[in-house]
Every structure is written in C-alpha cells, then in structure tokens.
Length: 126
Image 1 (tube, one colour):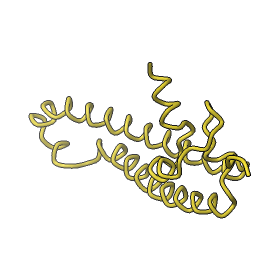
Image 2 (cartoon, rainbow, N blue to C red):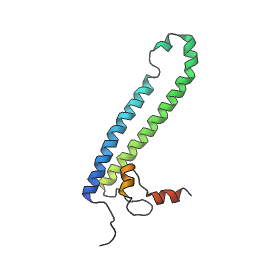
Image 3 (tube, helix red, strand yellow):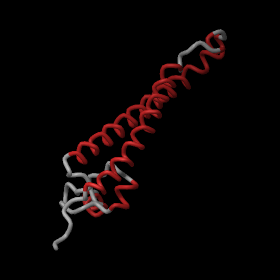
Image 4 (cartoon, rainbow, N blue to C red):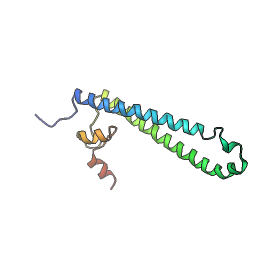
C-alpha cells in the first residue's frame, strides 16, 4: 500500500470537531471586540469632564484603532476556519497546497486552518 494521500473520514471528523470548537470561541471573541469597539465612545465620566476628555481622546483613538485591527484579525481567522471546514467537506483538508503531501496531524491540531506543511512554509520564506 502506498503513502496515504488524504485523511480518513473519521480523522476528518476529529478535525471538524476541533475547528467547530475554535470557530465558536472565535465568534465569541469577535463579538466581544465589536462590543468593545462600539462602547469606546459610550457615556461614562469622561463625557462630563472636558479636561479629562481632551487628555483621553488620543488614548481612545488608539484603543479604537487597536480594537478595530484585532476585530479584523479575528474575522480573518474565522474565515480561515470556515475555509478549512469547506476543505473537510471536499475531502482535501490536511493536504499541503505546495507539496501535495499530508500535513502532520500535530500541526493541524495546533493550527487547524493550515494549508502548508512546516517545510513548505519555511521554504516559502527564503
């Protein structure tokens, strides 16, 4: 028997469970970031004190920018996880897009949305 070219259906189900768990947590984090972003200009004591308001505007702007960047990163992570679920459906999950070889299970458990083996990823950075 030759080298394995794809993960079995039961292995794919294991990865699906890992991805769904990560997706659920990612959506919670994303919603928290969105809520934080929306509440940064809420009504608190800084609205009633002009002196402090001037001093904190810069910090608020920076916080909004940071929260916005974090929310964008989180959405990108969610999209990568959703794409991984599509690859599971297509039975192409876990196959390196550069080499065509299976990505080790350990890597997929750590980075379930990975599309490159460590070797392919490292060779692309040179």
